Length: 322
Image 1 (cartoon, helix red, strand yellow):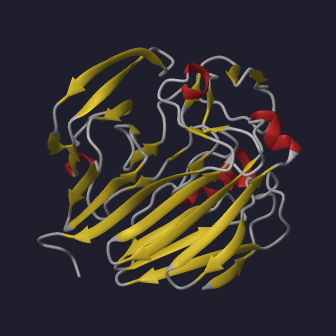
Image 2 (image 1 turned 120 degrees about the vertical axis):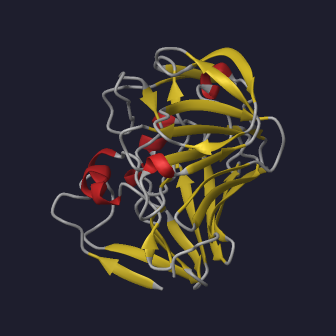
Image 3 (image 1 turned 60 degrees about the vertical axis):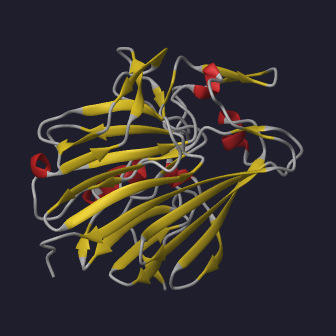
């Protein structure tokens, strides 16, 4: 289903598109999802039995103006933080201008999360009631200043009885190699129950030790599985999975919301400030700062394709509300 929204005055000043915003709604079973392809291919709603699972949606106007993360945004071409203002790949040094509107920064003035998602205008190639596929051509001068590797990106969102599955593919179809360091920043929560009561389940992982700027220092520590209340835990930490097919989840009030790391998402960041009723379990194709450090950095060879897939799974548990 395709609909049109008229944004509030000034809300899309940072985006290249015109007055109306097309949204695409996917529906399957007890789930309904809404995307805005022309504004970053962002998912702005995921409802289970009519109740919203995603968070920070009431901050849409600010997000459109600044690129801050709400709902389920793609962080591209790099997820998380980069140390300093430059990186190198295949002998090319890339300088990033912190004053540029095409660069995002965190509260420490550290570069983070790639190009602001509202500036990425995807083109819809296929849409049905349960599937949406869009393409982004990385060939505009503004984009190439940040990431000077011409290529295309294809994103496919599929809604079914298991949840919302998102596959993102990097296509090195312009003759050059392309480094891969993207990720997603899904904000979600459990309706009708406070954050402190959510049960958090994490697999065994390696914790990535970070410095005061929340950047890796090159050391890791093994962590056992966790299955207990989120309580007042405060997260902004990076992790590396020790086995494929990992899952992280929160449970409470008759629901479980999980992130399944299905393919080529071998890293994750957990962001869950103790003062807010949301959590972000973030799939990442590489660790933070990988464009600069080259640590475990995937590379797509000319003519090749790299695909990474995760699923946001929402299901009823015992004592589920109807």
